[in-house]
Amino acid sequence: MIEQEQRVAPPLPHLSQRAEVALLARALHRVGYADGLAGHITYRTSDDTLLVNPFGLTWDEVVPDDIMEIDLDGNVLTGPWTVTPAITLHLELHRQRKDVMVAVHNHPRWGTLWADIGREPPVYDQTAGLVAGRIAIHQEYDGTVNERSSAATVVAALGDASTALLANHGVLVVAPTIAQAFHRANTFEWRCRQAWHIEAVGGGVPLHPTMVDTLDDFFTRGQWDVPWWEAAVRRELRNDRDLREAVMGSR
Image 1: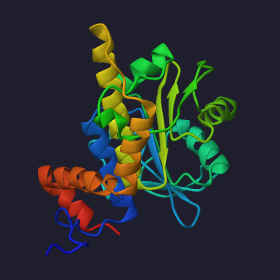
Image 2 (image 1 turned 45 degrees about the vertical axis):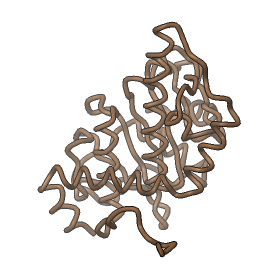
Image 3 (image 1 turned 180 degrees about the horizontal axis):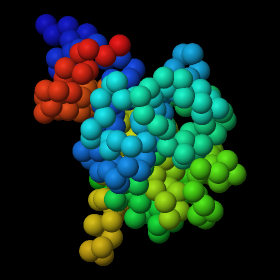
């Protein structure tokens, strides 16, 4: 008889919070969150500080010791590098959305196309339907999010949604865990890519919203987002020995 608690894959080594942020950046870079030095990830700790990727490193090169720690006013507490001026967006977000533990912003190719269009991409296939819910759209580009006023308009547009398209800018994804942040960001980029290609050849038949809700419920409530994240972590560790050593030595 198969035990109910049987794992679907080998367990990961212990990951510090800094390691999780570094691995999230690398895993998302691999699936398209790769616009040079652009983009920022924040992870809210139990001490109400934020772990954030450094400004001057691309997402595919960060290791745990590169991860910065800041307070909710943006002051650097620990870390060897600098923090992006655009962190204002995350500071405003974490002030207003206490439920958000992880926030991801970048300019992935396919998501940014739909942001530039200003329209939510339809759900055309099963994988694209693994994340349900409203996609918020920030309709007007009113400047970089370095300014608190611009950051506040983005947060207002996001509302209680988990994903937003930022007009002429990029994508914002929020989540309660690292695993769900990866799942949502990865799945949304898939959805954007598939919708672009399908509409380019004349369109298709989108999934019914109730089916999307069913898929999302099955996937997230069944905790399938966790092994998906674990698989992404194993791939990053498998492909980079220096990263493996850095993760194993992080605290």
